[in-house]
Image 1 (cartoon, helix red, strand yellow):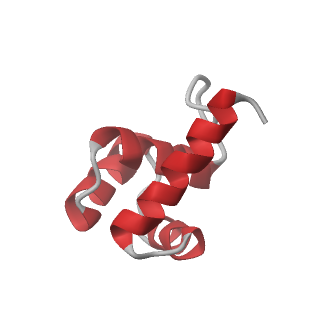
Image 2 (image 1 turned 120 degrees about the horizontal axis):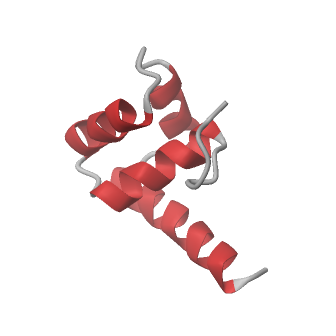
Length: 73
């Protein structure tokens, strides 16, 4: 596992600790929000869960299975 992959995994683990929610619960929150745009989802996570910009953005990328560099299809 590369250092980038380790950092990504650590960030996702920290998000779970901060929110007290599993990745499955967080994914359900995103999927059931009725939102689809990255920025809207990021803002919702920041407001609802108190996540910072980077953590919220990473979580959206994880759930939508995007890499943060290319637009979601």
